[in-house]
Image (cartoon, rainbow, N blue to C red; front, top):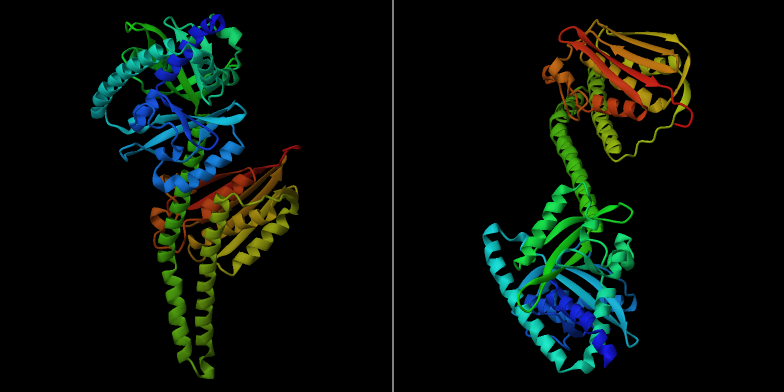
Length: 534
């Protein structure tokens, strides 16, 4: 009897914690049958004391989830571990009256007489979604709940006085709840000095019980430079003294100085006269949930970008495809009319128009495919040594037949003969710049190309004497689908310079543009040789 009496204060403390906890606690056997539920859980689900005992846990879960939940429950029983339930998923519970509500659930387990028992910590998160107009009503209900819990606690204490034979069993039972909970539980006296520090709190925060119990204030866990967190904590404490039990996002700091987010609820422990004798802080580590939310946000942003790209392509394609397709259709129709041998020049002329239109369509599709690969990160840079003069001349020769009447290209090079870059990407850049120079320059004009290679630096410049680009438009040249204000009537996709900038960026190049309306444009790209180890 003396041993039982010596543990009586601890037992009363654990019993008080169990009955004062501001979240639902439901204990199950290894078959999913409810062994006990704390007053908060009974209130949460609308049941009377003892009404849930012996019933399957599925009574608290909407019917449509029963079949799936049974499998999950059995799997957890075979491989128990303390963890949040349904991370990244929306969980729902059901009250006795059939009302569904959203919840967060953390699972813990312990061994009882050789069998696994499961502890479910259930939080109703529908409060977060209520409006301010509903908060006053919620406060009134929570105050009523505090009164009810006080009555339940008194009833339990009275029962313990008449049932001391169960004291040790209940002590071990509730100690198992705290020791195996998947949440951090810290109890303090009325001055904030830590009196209880459960194993989960010790594991997550890095302190041994001996380091903090009776010696440290709970403010030890507050990051010293986070004033907003301190204000929030004081607000939660003040609210708990008034019977309010709201949960809030808060930051804990470990012994090693690592800050991590938690969902924190603080409850005031009161004596029979209603005087506050201490506080209980229940915290759930939500770092994984926050990271999942961050990853989801990134994925949504990426999806948004891809949708914008698709939308831009549809808009561009509907406009740019119309002209070449109309040309192909009309030329095909006219070719059918030319049936005489002496009409071969006319047929050749229309075949040329068809080939030119097909080439235009191919260019549009290639540009869009290139943008798609860039956005998906599928462009691989394969640097290799190449002959500068030979490479540039080959591109010029390829582009020459697409120039306007009497247009010419003048090329000069100075400096070293070789450099190291991805030749394929460089050719695409030069071909795009030459194509633009020819497209936006008049007939009988000269396009100037110059390259230089000195001191591990390679410069490529393409200059035309065409329509030029305004200062305002130069700020947006490298954006997808952008067309200059004075280029609206000239065929183009608005993707070429975007691709040029991205390819140059992949090879650590810098693009600059010098242009003036009516006086032409010069694009200059400077590449630096990669250093060893880069």
